Length: 112
Length: 115
Image (cartoon, rainbow over all chains, first blue to last red; front, side, top):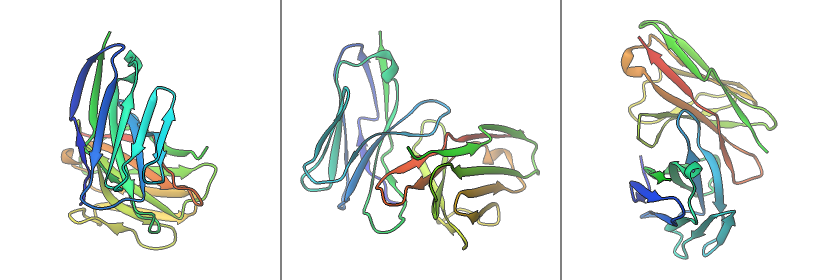
């Protein structure tokens, strides 16, 4: 099935550094979501974006819904060890109960 | 907030046996639930869409006779892995869309190991 293009695939950063990851799609989405998954757990919603151009923050996390509705990015500022995990972007088109389309994930490692 | 409870979190079974995984929406009604499979270091792969009171819709390549889905009520969907084999070992996750909202909430996943 369709999948979003998410990059980078993995990142190793020093504690305190900022992180940026992004997702692109060949088709338009009406909603973009960013999830974090820790080992042995299901994904947990971090940020939801509903409008093109929207910039939303959740603590140290900031995400934007691209103006073309075909992309989104997630920034994490001043990373800490507990930020470690896999971050997934996901999108859907609001057409009924359609499933989410996922990116392949960005595996984040934070070195203390 | 909307919570999806998935049970069990871990299960080990012998080859040839069947395993049932339950997914419950605790504080909302879910007419539709989604079942995913996740391999190590991979993204979530949609297996099927579970519709309350009707047959599930399976993704291409997913065996409907092997992965039986039942969505008998607005708060419960089950996935039964029948005649399990070691290659069925994986992490299975359910999800539901919260009505009147744009959010999808996920269960905590089930780690299935077939020995």
